[in-house]
Figure 1 (cartoon, helix red, strand yellow):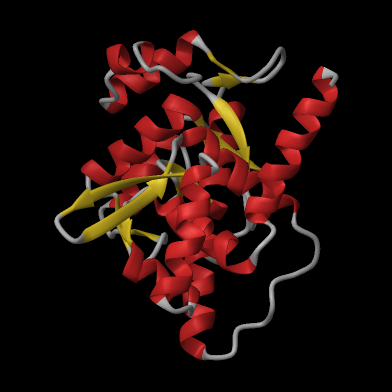
Figure 2 (tube, helix red, strand yellow):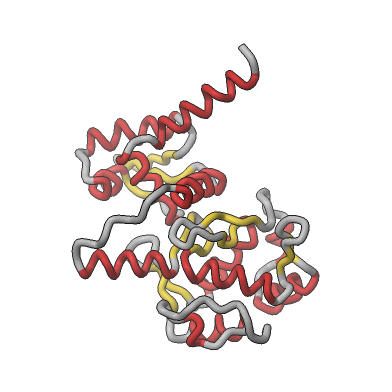
Length: 248
């Protein structure tokens, strides 16, 4: 058996894991970076607990999820950032448009997710794409030979209060692109993307919603605008994307 044949079979097995509505829905929900109980995931996917348990076992055995047991509860989460990238990239390449929301509540939830959300441990959505574009426009990132942090970017991060030693010691790529499934353009991932998202949450500039969504706080709008050289209005959910203007 050739190496190509072996890898082809492995790829087919991986694709089969996600070629199911319930398992795909579970993986998308876990992009919030949290550990969920099996019961919570069953309710989210709209299936019986026994059915969800079978799906979760397949995902764990396939290496996409890991589980932790605490007492009688079974907690599941994505196996790591590489799995999150795979799921988000596949969602970004999915053909067609999402189905129209059937209620005002669903429409608002969809709009909140499209504006800002977590993609495992980094910032995604329109806000995530906008901030990545600003880092490039201001020379804090460079993509001439592959995405990389510039010396100016290091100084900017230090001023923002991001611990540089933590970034350098991370066991993952420092900076990389992740295709955004709603914007169909890249947002920032890697250790840098995770550090920035963590900084924004710790500072209270963003707060978590009830799902993967993130909400910009009254203090966060002016703070992020100043950090990225934007006008506060540029960060509004309905603002047109704008990467021009002066840099911080």
